[in-house]
Amino acid sequence: MSSAWRRHSTVDTYIDATPDAVYDLVADVTRTGERSTECVACTWLPGHDAGRVGARFRGHNRAPHFRWTRICEVLVADRGREFAFRTVPSRWNYGASDSSIWGYRLQPEGAGTRLTHFHEVVVMPPPVMASLYGRFFPHHKDPRVPMAHTIDTLRRQLEATAASSPTA
Image (cartoon, rainbow, N blue to C red):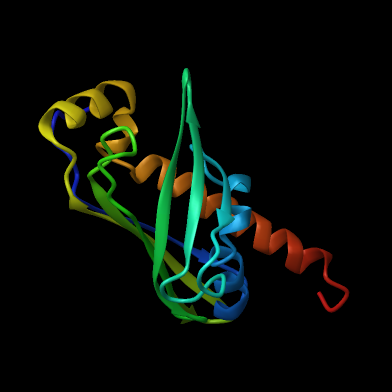
């Protein structure tokens, strides 16, 4: 894997489900652990209505030999179109002064939805932390493979739900 950090990443897929159905699943961050390779759970924090712009949640993450949490804040909550959040920088969270935006854009396509999962590094970690992250979490330098896993799992979840629906 390259030593450079990929600052912008996107992956996409077609899902045989409506944009609203896709949105409802991606915006339910409490289900993130069902599809992520790293985030095992998310819990909404008090302060704003869950799923609305400004709402915050705590992501619980794990990788071999490591466990950590990050506070995230919803930036875009436009049902059927886009859901995005950022990791909130915090110098008190294991040096996590970095920040990334993660999100999903939904576009109607035929009878289904074109789902684009995107990631943008807004604030890079300090050089020492970037070196450590890159060594212990190489997928953080280029997250496209885990992102593809996430949207493929979303597609399978939604299509399985549609297939088991009484109207299907």
